[in-house]
Length: 243
Length: 243
Image (cartoon, rainbow over all chains, first blue to last red; front, side):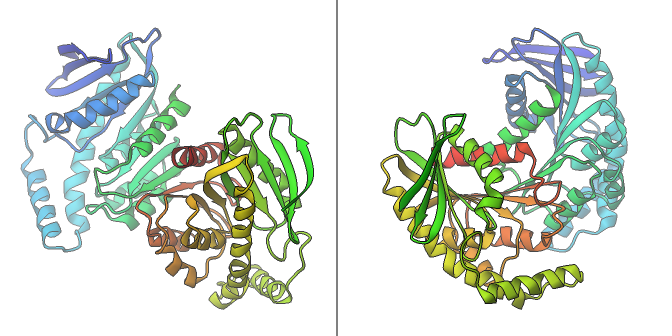
C-alpha cells in the first residue's frame, strides 16, 4: 500500500489517496482521533472520480462519528482496465433496460458474478493493508453497493462486523444462497421507487439474509434520493455496532 | 372531559386519568414543560388496563422528547360495553387463525370497519378536549395500531401532522383506498416475522399510502418484539415532524 496524495479537508479529516498494487483507493481518517479508529469500507458502483462527491460526503459523516473510511476502485471501472466480457454484459443489460424487457438472469450472472469474484479478494487485501496502519483499529463495517459484493464480503470475511447494504443493483440468484450464510447485523436501505431496481427481488433478498438482527429501511425517491434522515439512521447503526 | 385521577411518575411526568363522556383515557404531560407541548395520540389494540405497561413506557419516551401523550379506550374494549357483532367477528377470526385457514376478508370487514367508524370520531373528540388544555399545543401525531384507525385518522383529521403506524393487524380492503388519500409524513413499523400479520398485505399497504415522505422500518422478532432502536427511530421521526 503506497500513499500517493494527502490533503486535510476543512473539517479536519485527513484524506489520503493510495494504491494497492494497481488498484487506486482513498482513505479518510478523523481529524481528532486519539485511539485507533474503527473502519468503514465504503462500497460504490465503480468510478472513484465520478463518485467522489458522494464518497467524500459519506466519509466525512463517518469521520464525524469517529470512524475511518476507505474505498478502492472496482475492477473494470475508473482508470482500471476494462474487461471485454463485462463490457458486453453491461451493453446487454442496457439494451434490455432500454427495451423495457425483463432482465435475463444470465445477463446479471455474466455482469455481476465475475465482478464479485474479482472485487472481494481486493477488498480483503485492502483490509489487510488498512488494518496494519496504526491509526486504524477495528471493528470493520461495510457500507454500500454493489450489494452483491457486500453479501459475499459479509458471508466470507470474518473481520466485517456489521453492514449497511444498498438494495439498488442486480443480484445473481447464486448470491441469495450466500445471503443465508450471513449472520452479522445488517441495515438494508431500499429506495421504494428506484427505477433501476426490482423491489420484490430486494424484499426477497432481505428475507433471505440469515442475520438475527436485520433491519430494512424503505424510503421514497429514486436511486440517488436517499433522504438525509435515512443516511443518519445508517450512521447510527454503525455507531451501535462499531463503537 | 373530566380528570379522575392524578399522579406524578418518578421521572416527573404527570399522569392523569380522565373520562370523555363514557370513554376512559389517560393523559401524560412532561414534568418540565415551559410552553404548550405537542401531542402524540397513542393508539393500541384495546384494553387500557392490560396495555398500561407498554402505554406508559411509550408515553414516558414521548415526554422525555418534550411531547404530551394521550390515549383513550377503544369501543368494546376494557370496561366499555361489548358489541355482540364485534365479539362474533372476533370469534370467527380466532377460529380461522386456529384452524390455520386464510382469514376471510368478510370477517376482517365485520371486525374492523365498525371499530374504525366508531373509534375515529371518539379520537377526534378527545383531540378537541385535549387541544383545549393550556398545557397542550400542537402539532399532533398519531402513533400505533390499530393501523386501520390510524389510516382513517390520518386521512380525515387535518390536525394530525405525522403518524407512526404499526403494521400488525388486519386491514379491510376499503382502507387501502383511504390510504391513497393520506399525505402526511408516515413512519411504518413492520415486524417481518409477525406471526399474526400478513407481510405482503403490509407491504401493499405501505405502497398504497399517498404520502410523499413515507418510511418503512422492518425488523426481526414477533408482534411485540419491536427492538429498542426501532422505537428510538420512531421517536426521532416525531421529533423531526412535531418539534
